[in-house]
Amino acid sequence: MEPTKETAEQVLLEAEQSNPGPWADHSRYVAQACRNIAQHCADLSAERAYILGLLHDIGRYAGVSQEKHLIDGYRFCVERGWEKAAQICISHAFMIQDINTSIGKFDVSEAEYLFMKDFVANAVYDDYDRLVQLCDSLALPTGFCILEKRFVDVTIRYGVHTATVDRWKKILEIKADFERKIGCSLYKLLPGIEQNSIV
Image 1 (cartoon, rainbow, N blue to C red):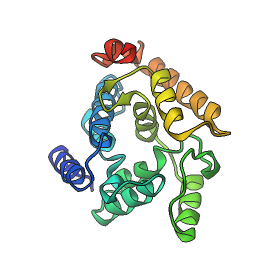
Image 2 (cartoon, rainbow, N blue to C red; image 1 turned 90 degrees about the vertical axis):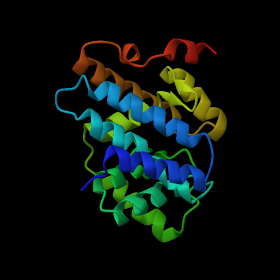
Image 3 (cartoon, rainbow, N blue to C red; image 1 turned 90 degrees about the horizontal axis):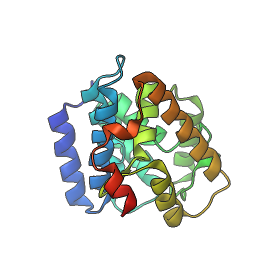
């Protein structure tokens, strides 16, 4: 079972009211990027991609946190029977399937950390996981941006981690994979990306 587009949009709106912040508009742009790219992939549903992108950070409803929003989002979705959305709440932060590549602080209990460690190591990723990972790096709260601008934005906020460059390389690899699928630059599918990347 998965939420409808309308349900996902309503849930995000309620979560934004619970914890106002730029994360919600970021989620909306991630969702739009997911939809725009999925429309050009024969094996993906544009609506499903949009919904999964919209919900990837839904754990932020619980308040300001770092990696805790991943497990909060997972639980939120599992409680509603949204299994794939639940997975993406965690998987979007781990393009490399190793808990040690996290760039955030694990503001969670030891049991939660161990659960996430096992989950990340054993999750089976598909193109929806990879698409959300990619689009998370194509969206600022103000609109679409080139990957390098988002990389800098995140690094300024979280600092440089031993896995930072490897994470960048993985996202660039995913971008190349999707561009092979669709036969053009992803940036052509993201309106306003030029202006938002320059400013």
